[in-house]
Length: 161
Image 1 (cartoon, rainbow, N blue to C red):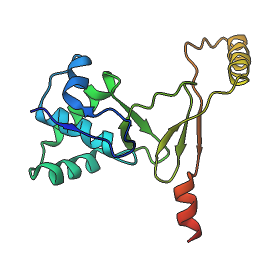
Image 2 (image 1 turned 90 degrees about the horizontal axis):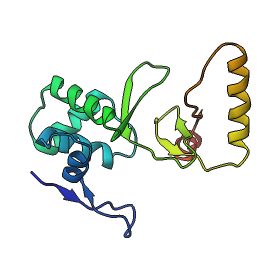
Image 3 (image 1 turned 120 degrees about the vertical axis):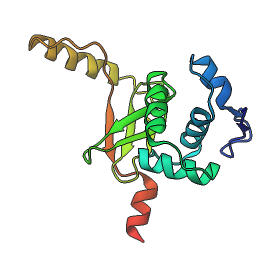
Image 4 (image 1 turned 60 degrees about the vertical axis):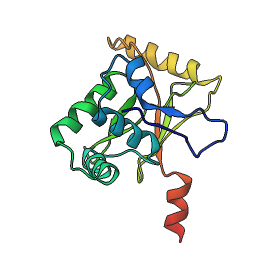
């Protein structure tokens, strides 16, 4: 099943081709994998496993096998097509992989939307200093990434109303 849909976000955005993304990542192209990837791509916020299963039922008219959804989500994460985040409530949430030039992100604590942070020329220096301080304590860091938490503009506006 080849499903290609256009993103409404921008007239210049290329069409979303779930089949090509799955194949390009070395994953099998199945109806479940395409549907889950498309649901995550078009969601405005990260989805829990239960939300993916409910949206799958709405989109296809069929209730999915819950284990299949877990496996598809795991494979999408392993392939780098989506991100898994666990916050204070300890619930896994899945969203399309956010490619941040800086490698750093912001996550809304209410809706769990993830946004790429803009690059800042000072940040690599700060992260380097933190890495050196950790090495002095015997901790070897392989990769650094910054995640800022707070409230996004949409959630802040809805609190005021």
